[in-house]
Length: 259
Image (cartoon, rainbow, N blue to C red):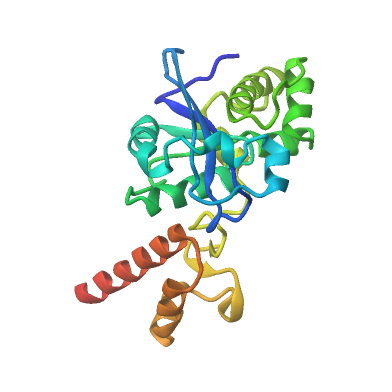
């Protein structure tokens, strides 16, 4: 089944120096852009992370320091990456919890804005886990009856993710061929930020999901303890989390001026 698209969607996969959203860096990124008319555009970059790649990470994806020594840094490809995904929805495997947050950090770090306000994300892993509960290689075999060669190659994983989603639509009639539906179906608990430090309560208000103010309204904490905002801004929190908090603070200030 081909995807029913109202605008382009970019499936992408990252290979990185590790799994820390704030500190680790991209060493390979592959993007497969699908247009509503079915045409495709793809691009894969090896990336110099400007930091050593741990041996245990190389053992997973096969990319070592020597392989990326002469490759461009993320800053050097950021414009091309940003332009490719601009105006597109996003898709990936475990992308809501890892690939999208880490890509957001890389873009923000290089001075590019990253905003999901007009973008939805389809996490194929979540659909898979809700329906079958396995891994990408197993998903590829189960849905596509193929063996995933070169697993942990960003390009192979990206193409496999796209093919798995199309096969999921064939297999499960209850899944609507609609990106907004698939985004909502593949999302877990809703958070205002990617890392999950700011959640939404039952009324759609932002609340802290960690620490001494867990469960408290963000705006109320900012009113009662203004220094908490400054502490987060100066601590080792993801850039996107800081961006979201800044937006909430500015919204609060603007609303106060209107009163």
